[in-house]
Length: 64
Image (cartoon, rainbow, N blue to C red; front, side, top):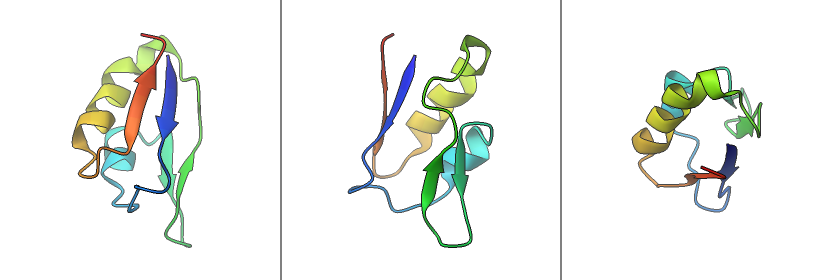
């Protein structure tokens, strides 16, 4: 699984970070950082929740 973030659409709402803090982080500069582009399979449920929770639909998964 590969996580793709459209940073042009992302508003750094941090809802993805709440769902999967191992993969997403909004730092003090108010920008989203992708900590793992290819997270392990055991994080799939959390990453899928992050994708669903994004109000801007800026996160997608590839390679499913």
